[in-house]
Amino acid sequence: MAGSKRREGGFREGVRHLLPWAPTVVGVGALLFMLLVTMFRLSPAERDDDTALGPVLPPPAPRETVVVTPSPAGPRPSSPAARSAHSRRPVIWSPSSATPAPRSTTPAPRPTTTRAPAAAVTGRYGVVGTYDTEFIGEVAISNATGEPRDWTVTLRFPDNVGDLRTSWVESAPQATLSRSGDSFVWRSGVPVGAGSTVVLRFQFARTGTGDRPAACTVNTSRCT
Image (cartoon, rainbow, N blue to C red; front, side, top):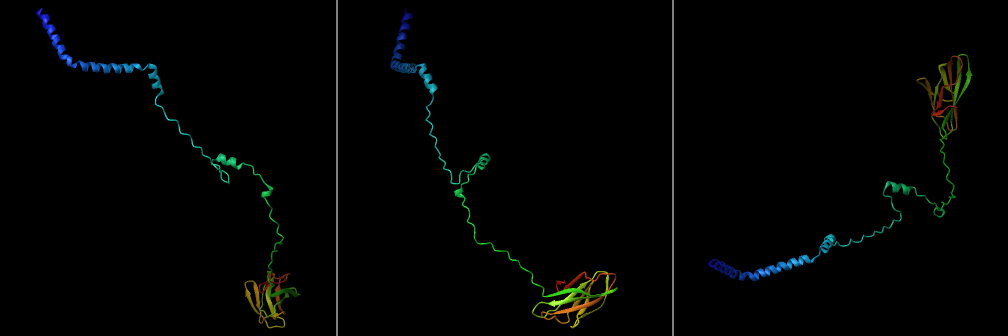
């Protein structure tokens, strides 16, 4: 009996010590209860739908429409295939766009031909007489200008013509004779008069036939 009284007295003493904390414990318990009720009020289907939907994204911005205006010369192909296709486009010819050029009524100028001036002093070769071993030839020197002109006669013969026997100028002062290689050169003693002719004659030894010179010039003109 004494032991049960001691246990009952101890229990009462403990309850008295806990009474000041009773409101706190009750408040905490009420908060926990309200939290659990709030959590379980959401059904599993609602929680799954919210999880599946995820965050709501804003709608995409509209694309900007770009309008390209071709240039007057036409678009340029940017690739080899495009350039090839562009080059194969047919060309349409329009008669109105191709106006023929007017024909010129002015006759084209005729080309002018420049003639070389006639030689002032000319010569003509001839043979006066021919013999078995020699011949006599001449060069007639003519001046077609209006003033006296000096002259130079150059003769070269083939191999069948040998030494010069003699030479003279008919009815005029004699010329000066010289040799230049195989050529004989006569220079006038006095000029030939305007519109006049003088004759240079010469006698050569000869072997066989043939009395024509290989070359004959008077000043810069070839003998006729």
